[in-house]
Amino acid sequence: TDLESTLQLSGNLLPQSRVAVTAKLPGTLSSIGVDIGDRVQVGQVVAELDRRDIDAQVDAAEAVVNVSRAAAEVAEAVLANAVLEQERAQNLFDRGAIPKQRLDAADTARRSASAQRDLATANIAQAEAGLRRARETLRDTTLTSPIDGVIVERHYDAGSLVSPGDGPIVVVADMRIMKLEAGVSELDAGRLRVGMSARLTTQAHPGQTFDGRLAAIAPEVDARNRHFQVEVRVANPRAILLSGMYGAATISLEQLAQVITVPRDAVTTRDGRRVVLRVNND
Image (cartoon, rainbow, N blue to C red; front, side, top):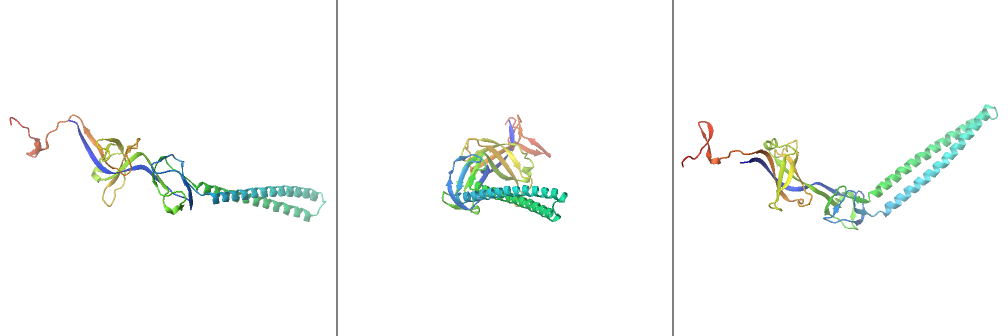
């Protein structure tokens, strides 16, 4: 007879990944393009906020950048002219054609023009930073799915007012792999190893068995019940297993092939030794 030592675990099935999509800005939902049960891909747009005010902010920020760049061009031209004037004054002073006072004035004008150019350059950097912030805010009006998965919750419709603290607009779950989490005793945890095979059954699909594996063992005991948390993962390519289903997992601890078995009632103790009673001639 082939024998197998197993450990039974049970609990509710959960998707391996479950992510809430929330608004980063307060505003009005202008559209929501998904419903419960829809499949989405990472980066797919699921909802959009009204962006008219932010579009205006981006336009204004772009105008500030353009004005700053124009001012920088003027400052650059003024500096170039001041450099020429200072060099001309230096040559004239070296020949004794102008007094030191005029050379000092040319030097001062050059330093002033250089400072104005540096200020104009800083204004460009500041304006471009404001434009980047405005564009980032504009991007935040478009809500996308962070993972491939299925919409399992939807809480708002188009026209609803939302804000970052209001909770998720939709929830996306990747159900290609399902997990069953359970607690095991210290004794059982010592017999488990990550990667052990597991067989999963569910009440919703009687007679069907799903192959999985032990994916994780918590390295720390839960002080409340002295149990270690373990996780069994099962592939779910056809989406047969749904979130919240009750499942039972059987983990194979040890297997023995072609061993002799006897009824439990035939085993007894005699003279301090464990022996098996055999029927002989009734």
